[in-house]
Length: 255
Image (tube, rainbow, N blue to C red; front, side):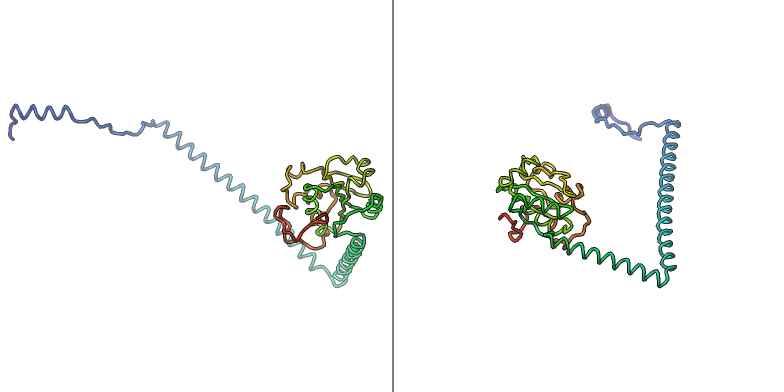
């Protein structure tokens, strides 16, 4: 072993004194009790999740069993049918179809399926007496009323069970005063010869002229002046659209 000289010793001492200090990271100390509490929490969470999973599985099985039982009952009921029962069901269905065909024929003869104008004020009363459900648009020649025209033209073809008409409020002063028509456009929703509800302006349709036909349809269905699932004539492929998205081919009666 060699011995360092005095000068070498001084150099080594100087370097050791000027070495940068390095902090050694250490994990926070956790007592035995803290570790035990953490383990207990994990076990409780695991147990809770297992119980929730068990409850969900039981509910799913219960619903599946109920559906299966319902299907079994329907199959059993069909198995019990004899030829007479089947013939009776067929006859009942034919009668229902015949009645519906008669209704549709009558509605069409009254002008249902089209959006038309009542030219003379007194004709309004004949229209509401003839049909159980009438949507009457009180309008004037302006843009908001033309927007309403386009939507009503679509709905008239979709909901043959209801008569869709319009009348110029300025040319029908008696009706406008009697029905308290102030804001235009206003829809009078008439059932069994009585005005049951109103749609005034666009406030209930989002407050803008860019509402969709579906939104107006939903409002009329809420008033039960149309059948939402309805006895409609023919579905319109372009149903879900706003007037701004309509094609020029769908021009209204007023244009």
